Image (cartoon, helix red, strand yellow):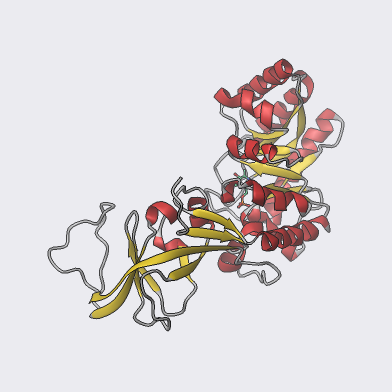
Amino acid sequence: MVDQSYPRVEINLQYLKENVEQIVKRCGEYGINIAGVIKGTTGLPECAKQFADAGCKMIASSRLEQIEDSQNFGIDLPYLLLRVPMPSEVHEVVRLCDYSLNSEYSTMELLDAEAAKQGRKHKIIIMADLGDLREGYWDKDEMVEVAVKVENELKNVELAGVGTNLGCYGSIEATADKLDELVAIAERIEEKIGHELEIISGGGTTSLPRIFDGDMPKRINHLRVGEGIILARDLDIFYGYDLSFMHQDTYTLKAEVIEVKDKPSHPVGKISIDAFGHTPEYVDRGIRKRALLGIGKVDYGSIEEIFPKDEGIEVIGASSDHTILDIEDCKRDLKPGDIVAFGINYASMVYVTNCRNVQIVYV
Ligand SMILES: *Cc1c(COP(=O)(O)O)cnc(C)c1O
């Protein structure tokens, strides 16, 4: 393995744990259990452990290898698969997960057969699509019918409950009305099966405003939260919630300066296309001092998703392995070997934690 210090992402595990505690406590006041979602941080088991230690009742991911890593790390909680299972992976789903979110009866039948084969219990949460238009039943009569079939006809899996997901594709807000719709579906199912469902899962981070505003429907008893715990940025930036009780700097990306020079701000010569096939707009601001970093789009995705901590530093461009900064107005006198720090968001977190070139350092 190449022994490199930079680029690196520093993860403050104590901050992460305190963030989990805050959300677990606030949701707990409404009778809501939290499934800690680890996919945003690429399932790093050290991070999953903070979710477990701070009171999450489940660990959840969309990816099986992340769930297996946490189990091998010794985190002893029920595991939930967030992404509707691929029929080809039901063997692994039953082997690794205690719960899965589902929207196809044919796959639930496969899970049932597999649970019988492995002699393992597996619990099913059926997803309702309430308008966000990703996974889940659009036809709610069909959904109720399928739930009753899982309860009565599938002998090896258990119907755990219902869930929904909002704000991922269709940008639909998790209003109290939307979540009331989910509760109404749950109650139709309960009436038909003659007992209460274990889980009514009201969404992810985008459902936390119902807790902050105090209008979460009473019967919602489960949320699956990742971003709102790990970074706690989106609800602040996009909805204006005061999240000052959360650490928003749990993750810090650091990269090393490899070149510092005064250069024109407008490319010189005939403009065609950049490394990724685009032609950006270049603003001519005359000769400016700029720095080059040994990190690029392959490491973090896009320059809009990283936020320099120094005042007076502007990220003006990047290619696969280089990032270009305008440092004309930076108070620090940067030179090769110096380190520049960035805050990150969900989009860049999924890249930097998933990139072999970026060292992961726990602080
Ligand atoms: C990713 C995901 C979540 C968690 O999303 P966050 O925004 O990180 O809280 C919850 N449910 C499902 C189905 C998901 O895919």
